[in-house]
Image 1 (cartoon, rainbow, N blue to C red):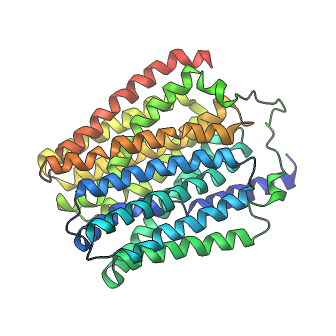
Image 2 (image 1 turned 180 degrees about the vertical axis):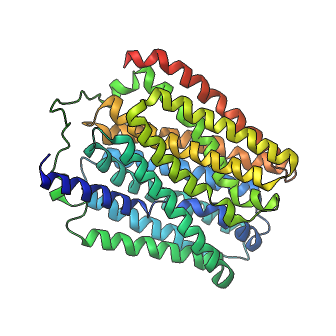
Length: 406
């Protein structure tokens, strides 16, 4: 490969990772739950879980729409829209009237889900779908690096939230996050050499073998049994991971730990994204499906042991293992869609494949109501995580047959 092409690829990877550092903003919801409940005592755990669950549905819608409008709007315009919507969604929390909890909840739902989450979906579409196809032989590795940046950003922002919350409160903390996203978005857009610029978009990814990879149109992909096997597998593991992300901080406190320690689930998520994604390039998606499902099952068993013995170290180990499995399933899923169905229609196929995120969001929203029904006990939530691994294990076994039909 020519030296200039290598530099372009390196720049593409670096800028994709940098842009992805903005996309972990919404994962700090776990840290914000308790401060929001203190500010609005009339709200419940179930109401907060509903917002967290539905925000993933809107993120999915943003990714899907980003794929649809990619033929009409440049990536730079989509990315600019992402920055504006996320700023409005997070900064708008400053307007919540504390003396009207019902109105505030409706506003929080609209701001966090429609504006912020929808904007994040557009950002994911702009960054992921334009970066991964540039690396035909290392799609798992670059996908893992992007998701690792996503997990790392959530840890950094959670640490920042821990500093800001005691001094400025939850509403101003949300405003600061919105301003950070807006500022970095503007900086990236001002760099004419960035991944979003036309000169880089004009470079077409070419397979190292020189042979054009067959590509499936969205309708062809939807007729593939392997797509549906992958989809159900990812929904199962993604839902389990979202349950853990939603409740990690409050769960840790309930078992004698700290919220900040529980947020180590995010770097574990990032480590899983990169290590499992890289392993997929060598092992293939079928073996990775079994590995990720097995890790999540072990995580569920460790969480159950921590719950029954009321031991935080066991619980923390389960959270970290679950983070590894969740991260690995996310990065390998995105890369496998490109590997199995080709790069030509990847932007559209990527958007369609992320209906997994929306389905997982709807299922995950039940976890908060399980917590309410259990009177604050996390046993039901942990059992939900363990049960969700069963469809994933079945799909991993089924993939041995359907892979031949792709």
